[in-house]
Length: 450
Image 1 (tube, rainbow, N blue to C red):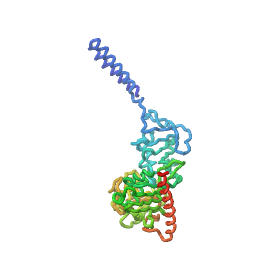
Image 2: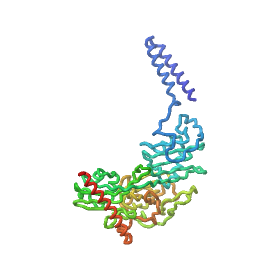
Image 3: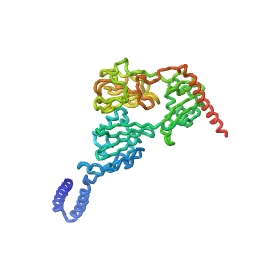
Image 4: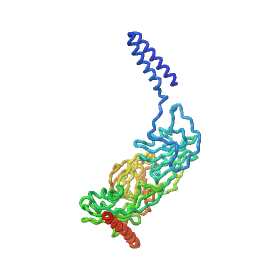
């Protein structure tokens, strides 16, 4: 078909050239004839059949995501509408996400159907890991004669999800979280300018410095309380996998000794307290609604999906509320996502601190935006029936250290002081950390004179 089209175009073009040249002097005929010859060659080589698609990033034919390689099999022949060379000539492909990429564009390039993408999104409903792919994330594809057999998503060194095609044709997921190992580091320094930059100069990472300022924002005014020469000590545990830092840190202790203000923070039993055992964190509210409503579906990691009948973990609590019911933030935090999802509907995700995260699904309206700070009890949305839903309700999730937990029974920061039976353990931990901090400070003070 394409060859016939080229012949018609060339024949028509030749007739037009002959008609024009017959009315011109000989010198003009020579010049125009040369130009026409060049154009003729260009038309011959410009056919769409020679176009090769350009990948949004660099595809590789080896899967380096620490998973077993797929068996070598033959793939289906591409359809007549996709005769161009394809990236799926190899049954195993890995890809590093680049800026501007979306799952849709990547799947389109690999000629993976939209229906398959929707199946993956449905399987991902209870994780929502694929919702906001970012540059640097790794994607893996394993194919067989029926198409996509396995899809792999990896974020950093510690988090990976594999989606495997089941016998029914749907995808089931497995989540892998690498715990790695943590190493404690003691950092000491003095204030020169603002606190985050002072901490960075002393050896802290800027993200760690912001964790400290966010933790102490209710106790310290970082403009009026700071003075040049104030001292601070930080105890931080950093996560490593095979000797490589993952980017995850846990602030274990922080002491600020200033001319105007003295402040401390210590992690104990999952929450932060000052040296006197007073809580530094505002309490959560158990239910993100103004009053208690009937629970229509409880947290159940082994629930069978009511529509597909496949095992799909129910990682949240469903409240039977009508459309438009005010939804409240369970605690202070920062909005990380406001997204419309094919199956989760309109949903909001709030990061409360390093440890806690909440999600609110199937909303009808959002009153907050990504990056906005919110307070406990603040109205953030209206409930709804968006996405794949069997009726109007609010699906609420609580995640602790990256894992979903039962929000109705989980331990959440509601205490303001440490219980009496734990005070001795707390005091011992504080004493141990402050001793390590003091020793590090003494070493730092001696070092310049040596």
